[in-house]
Image 1 (cartoon, rainbow, N blue to C red):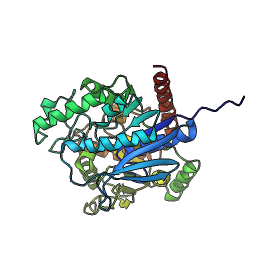
Image 2 (cartoon, one colour):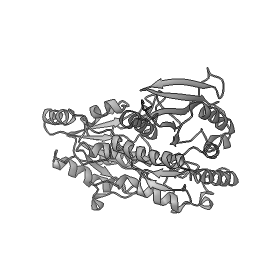
Image 3 (cartoon, rainbow, N blue to C red):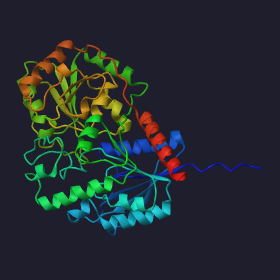
Image 4 (cartoon, one colour):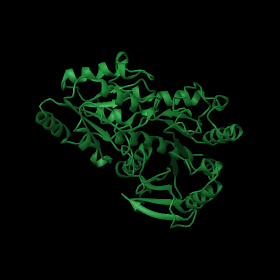
Length: 414
C-alpha cells in the first residue's frame, strides 16, 4: 500500500509590506525568514500585506507572487481615521476572507501598522496558532519609536500611558489605542522580541502573549568573495580610511553630531559615504555636508543583493543613534564583515559579542566625545578587526520553524 506523503505545513505571513513592495528592515526580516521557511524547512508560505494606490478600489486585493510566495496585497484608501491605523474592521474582514481561502496551519505576524491588531482576536476565533513578532515599540507608543515631540528619546521604563500626555494629540484616544493593542497581543500564542532590551521593556510595560521569547533578527551574511573585494579595495586605497553612515540626516540618528565632529577634525585624508535609504533619493538632497573634512559622497540605496558592494567600500560604520533601538541591523552587518563600529549605548544595538562597554558613546554625547573615536580609527589605519559570528537569516528561520512546528503539533493534539 502506497503511503501518502503528509502535506507541508502552510504558513501565512502578515506584514505591512512584503515583496514586491519592500520597505524597511522589518520587511526584510519577514521576507528573508519566509523564503527560508519555504526553501530550507519545507513549509508552504503565503503572505498578506498592504499598499495604497489610486488606481485600485479601496480594500480590493491584488494578488502577486515572488520567489514562490503568493502575496495578497490589500489596497488601503489614503485617508483613514486614527483608529483605522491600528484597528481597521474593514481590513480585518478582508483578512478573514483571505484566511478562509488560504487555510493556513499557522499565522506569523510582523508589523501590523495600517493592517490593524483586530486580526489577532479574529484569528484566535478560527483557532489557528499564531506568532506575533514585534520589531519596534508601535504596540506601546503612538509615535512608534518612543521619540518625543521635541525629537528626543522618551526614556520611560516602564512605558506608561500617563507619561505620554506631552506627546499625543488626544490622551483618551491614545489610552484607548494602547489598551486595545495590549489586549490583542495577549491572545497570541507566542510574542517575539528582537533583543533582550526590547523584551524586558515591553513585558514590564504590559505587552506580552501567552509566551514571550527573544528572537534575534538575522542579517545577510558576507558572500564568498566579500573579503577578497575588501582587501583589494584597501590595498588600492593605500591605507585611506573610509567611514559609512546609514542613518539619514536626522537628529535622532545622530547626524548633527557626526556633521559637527567631521567639521572640527584636523585631518582630511579619508573618505565618507552617506547612504540614501529613501525610496526617492531625497534624504541628502537638502543636507549640507560641504564643511565636513574628507571626501564625502552620497551612496544610493542598496538592497540585500547589493549589500556587500557597500560594505566593501568602508572601514568604519558610524552608528550614533540618540534613542534606545530594539536591534541594530547595520551594526551586525558590519561586524560580520570585520568592519569597526563606533556606536552609542542604544538599547538592543549593543547585544553583540564585539561590544566594549568602555568605548560606547552615550546618548547625548556631542561632537567633542565622538572626535577621539574618529581620530583613533584614523590612527589605527586599517588595524584589522576580525569578523564576528552573528545570527544569519538561516539560523533565524530555523528557530521560527521549530516554534511554528511546535505550535502546529500542539494544535493538532488539542
